[in-house]
Length: 200
Image (tube, helix red, strand yellow):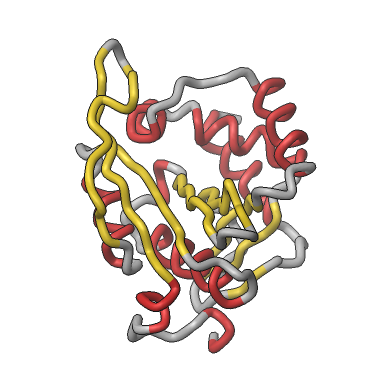
């Protein structure tokens, strides 16, 4: 069995027979579990993802321990992104949730072989609908490298507005990187001309 076959098997197992936490038109969001650690570890170890997200690969044990901690964290919700076929294609999260202020941050990561198929936009739209449609959020934020065109495009397509740039805010591969700062407010979401997840 080669590595690609093993990854495909892991992806199938991760999404098999698990009830979605949130459904949208083209993707479902399935709550992340500790058993998903190997899949997340594989995705995070991809050099392109590591560069774009600005992280370095961690051990499988460290990833599993991080997931265990995050599951207990009331301030974040993590999901696998599953298209209608049921095979997970990435990870999306609503983090740093502050119910009092109505703020949270969104995070998105797609597996290398599933990029460029619209899953990122679909998953982000679904997460945004969850945040504004079921939770009392008023402001969502996101950050990405200013030299990450796919992420910049997904955020813009989902209605986020670039507020500015955090200069030299990230250290990666021996140099400083600027981060583009995006936000989406509830009134802006309400004006978006697209179906909501619950209309799927």
